[in-house]
Image (cartoon, rainbow, N blue to C red; front, side, top):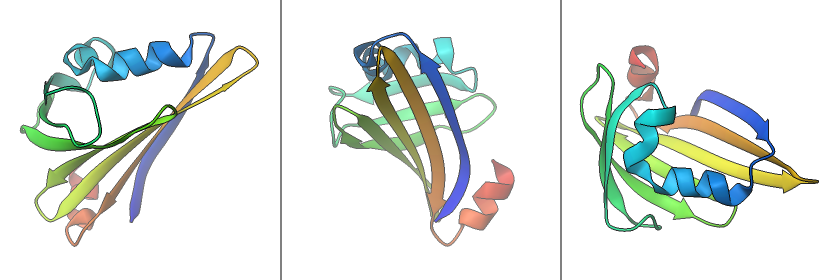
Length: 116
């Protein structure tokens, strides 16, 4: 596995607020400036599939690999690689910490890491 990037932010917003934003994938371009559009087929749940279009890039199919009360993982299939976004929430003392880790696996991961 190749780690590509990670980010973390802390907020006073509730964990439910973040999950609601993640679940409403059609609104992702409002807060994710790298995303042109996202279409999810069916409800936001483990096993759901969809397609997203990064700005300046090709359409990419993805699957919602996991949804729990603390984590949401989606996996995009690229030629010869899988790109995984692991979104996690930790709430403590009225503060919510949101983190995202991006990783890649597969024989062409080295290529996609260079391209992305």
